[in-house]
Each structure stands twice: as structure tokens, then as C-alpha cells.
Image (cartoon, rainbow, N blue to C red; front, side):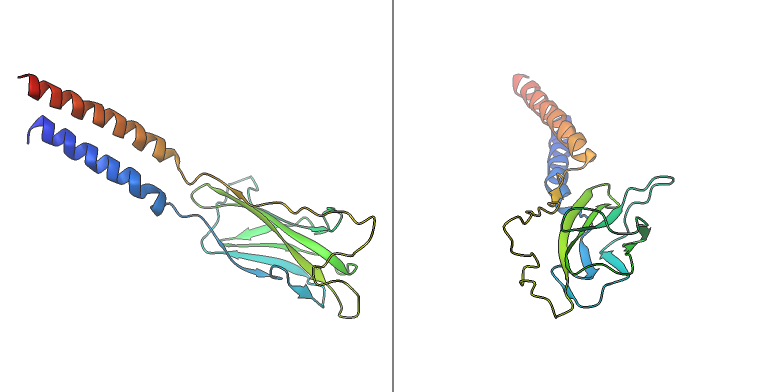
Length: 184
């Protein structure tokens, strides 16, 4: 095979690899939660459990996956004992809490190293209160609650930069080979 054909084949293969790389790199997704998003719970839960579609990253000696529960004022109310077991993150809650809105906040790391961060609301209502369906009390001095928003990291991996660099170099070699063959 001539150097020109080899360079062209290498460039096309590298370019194809770059184009399909983002489609192949998947991240963890939350598949179930207990209590669920926007769920109105009539009995205070003892534990919050989040289950993801794949195992999460575990780092020896470091906690990289976090699950917290906060009240409407933003104060952390869980027992600060978040644990990870494969694809399940849990945290225990105090035995009794007042009626109202609570936020489940999580930051986990996919096995591929990408951070997934989000928050959702649960509503504790015994069925006897006048809490509106949104779970927030209507009052003049009510505090606006802004939960942690989803942070979506770039879908590129460290390999994307390497593939781009190799593509540029192979394209340069291809052009160089082509120009040398035309000159001869």
C-alpha cells in the first residue's frame, strides 16, 4: 500500500472514530428515587434512596458521591451519612420533621468520571394541611427556593482531544503526501 493510501485510510479511520466517540460515551442516569421527584409523602421517610443505571465511581479514602436533603430554608437536615453501594446512593433522615417542602440534592460521579448534579423537591404533607400543590407556602415574606440546577458537563472525554490532534496530524501528513506525489 502506498504511503498516500495509508495516510488517507488512517485519516478516515481517525475521523470516523472522532465522530462516533460522543455517541459511545454514556453517563450515569438516575433511574429511580425514593421518595420520587415532586412526591407528596404523608409519612416521613427514614431514608432517601437514589438508583442509577450503572455503578458510580468509588475513590478509596475519598467520598466523591454526595446525597443531601435540605429544608425550604436551605439547611441540611439529613443525618450526613450518605453511602454508596454500586449504583445506589442513600442517606438517612431524622425521625420527625415538620410538614413542608424538602429538597433532595445529589452530586455523583459516573464510572467514566463525569459529574452528574441535580436536585428535586419532595413535599411532606399529612393530608391535613393547607399546603398548595407546589409545596411552598404562600406568604408575603416567603423565601424563594432555588434548588441546585443540573450541571451537565461536556460530553467530550480526554480522548477527544487526542483524537482531534491525531486527526489534524494525519490530515497534514495526507496533504503532504498528496503534494509530494503531485510534484513528482
